[in-house]
View 1 (cartoon, rainbow, N blue to C red):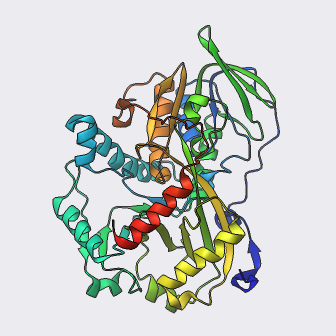
View 2 (cartoon, rainbow, N blue to C red; view 1 turned 120 degrees about the vertical axis):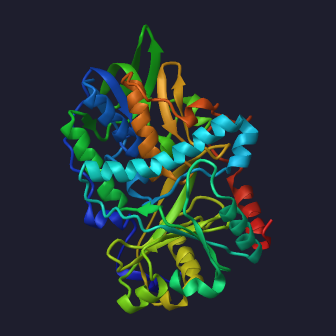
Length: 432
């Protein structure tokens, strides 16, 4: 691909890191004992740590990289109600009561982030701007309209349809056949949000140890022993908060998480008049394709942040950037001259049932598998996980009432991803 698509100051790292540089935490060895030790310093781990530390438990968080180096500082900053299967499908799988509880978790996750940001005074450009979900085919619009009319059996979505002839008020493109607006969905700056969580965790007394990879995990004798690159920690409870970065530490969890790369770009600054014409609202945007693209104006409305899956296998952000740019320009030809200032990727943690999971196995607690909805669900389930680890009340939720499935022959490397992506491209093209 031509280097002309890249700005002179191009960076192969998240746009969000410009404003919020990587945290400069002291290099230290973890304590040899703690009541709770958490593996992973993203949204899940820090929300869990805040709960346990504020409950008076000595809490240590270890991470193989910088704090929040994974998808907690790499995502698009969208916050929705998070649940991919609808009520009918959930009810078929688990019965009406559990289906309702799972959907209630989705609504609770959206509300929780807003309440937490406000109550903790976290400066992260949080705003309830809504989400526009575009129909990429006429039949997709019809399906959205049916779902919108049916509503949600657990909570009011306030969703409304936007026909194609009214699209200009929502989005400056003719590529969609209308769409649906979910006005209560929200957005934020993910790296600033993570920085706020990290500060609140440290204020609560949490010891955060970066560059301290967890290497072994042993249970028994009423305790859990976590081996790390900087020493061994013996704890009453261990929390795995690794999601799409779950490695070989626990084979049980690794067999249940599918790491899938999601790729993003940020453009050079766009003229205000063009930005206002193309994005007259501050909504985040998704569409009805299986291989979904997601995008939004940056919080200062100077750039376009555009993400999605662009290859059948994992690739380099320098290669994915031009592909994302081409799709962006297909949707918005006026952005053809806006070069790429940043291109990056992160691993989303997917599951075989497209649901997040929270639970405990052999004395080790986990919350993971957010399937691309990690800002809200990782925050909410991380909080619930911390309350469970601390033995606090109100630590039960719908996602804790279901099993965590895997598949035969799967050991953590998604060999099936390439053919699956190819099949989804065919389905997207023909609306299958």
